Image (cartoon, rainbow, N blue to C red; front, side):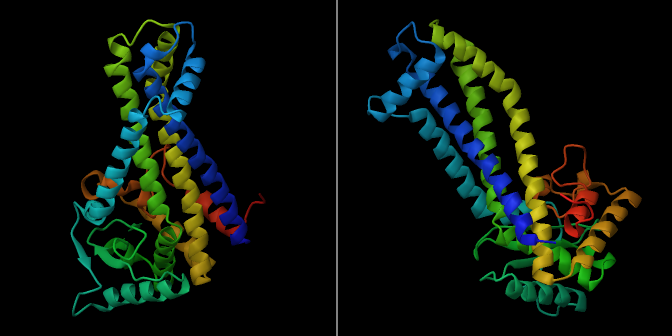
Length: 323
């Protein structure tokens, strides 16, 4: 398989969605500014003309974009807090062991640490992430962070007990791929932008539109737009988030094979993990930390899945079906 081609295709698709996110974020900000200065806007203007009027007012310095700047500031603060406490959030709710500084490691624990050190070299990542084992029977792994100060990889005891060394290496290489490709950063930014946009629309609706918001032609049209956004924006953004997540999983699978040179181990690991979830009824609502759903190696969830189907992931790796 041409893994460079897989990377390029998935990067391109992800970038298109990211551009859409930024444009949507700015449009919601501009809509908020338009409602904020509606008394300055000529009464005969429709919403489109009113938004152009607002845009010109911002460019000429007549109006400071306080609503958009507030949205962006809130997003930056949330991202900063998440970065600072991200690892604790990802590990919360589980019993875990950090291997990097542990003395008297078992042979299994030493194997995980050795694999990670080897992958650090093969992936050309300049720093060693923190390595954790989570004491849970289900099979999964995840990564977090993108720099030396906040990166980590974690793997469950259930996965270690049921996979061969080569398969464990393939899974860990997948997680190192997420760090190498800055997928955690991407997921974080998209998730924060989603939440800020949804809350901004709610604030506009209840704070301005829901309480009148003016009777001009532009404001009447704005009410309709905000109502539509309030209903459909949460659906649209979650669909886009899931789409990005699935594309980055394909990228991480390709990275795993690139770092290890072992396509069969990756395919075998996916098959074993999928089969294990079908045979065992794990109480994931109790054991699993839902904040890391997008970061997990495997998602045994619903139709609205964060991960592609196992069959598609294997097909993508083996080229079983022509594109």
